[in-house]
Every structure is written in C-alpha cells, then in structure tokens.
Image (cartoon, rainbow, N blue to C red; front, side, top):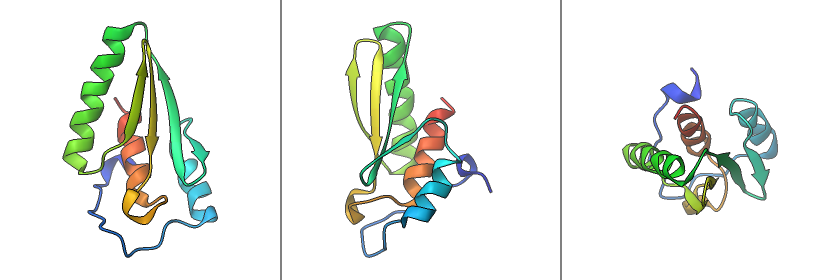
Amino acid sequence: MNLKSKKCVSCEGGIPKLNPDQVRNYLTQVRDWKLQEDKIQKLFKFKNFVEAMKFINQMADIAESEGHHPDFSVHYNQVDVTIWTHAIHGLSENDFILAAKIDAV
C-alpha cells in the first residue's frame, strides 16, 4: 500500500522510533525529503507569497485531517517544512504518510 493511501495513527508515545534502515526505506517513498537528525525536512518553492500561503492552507487541512502536524516557516515564496513524531522524539511511519500527502498538494 502506498503512503498516500494510508492514514496516520494516533501516537502518544510508547512506541519505538524507526531505525535507520526503516528511515532509509521510507525516504525512497517520498520526493526530495531530507533526513535532519531525527526529523525529515523539505523546502518548497513557489512563484510568490500568495502561492506559498495557498500551499500552507492546503497543508494545514491535510495535517488536521491526519491529526499529525508539521512545523513550518514561510520565507516570502518558500515554505520550509519539518516533520517528526514529537511523542517519540523521532520518526514514525506517520511522518512519511504526512510527507507523501503534502507532496501530493
């Protein structure tokens, strides 16, 4: 099953974070996300600020429906997105599900 068709599962901790081999496998399933310590990060570039904000709003809708929320910052026409599972201080499958869905925007 591809990541876009999966649903994030609520995580309140108590599960192990993904090991390095699992992370490498999941990274092959998302476009251009980079591993940054125990997080994944991607910089999205847009034509202008308005397009960047449209993306932010679409991303917010996805994040809310998945119950899994990324950190992000806006720099005029660029949106820097970072995802990890706060409850486990590392990466889970949820992070890659959300990344795949954000990529589909």
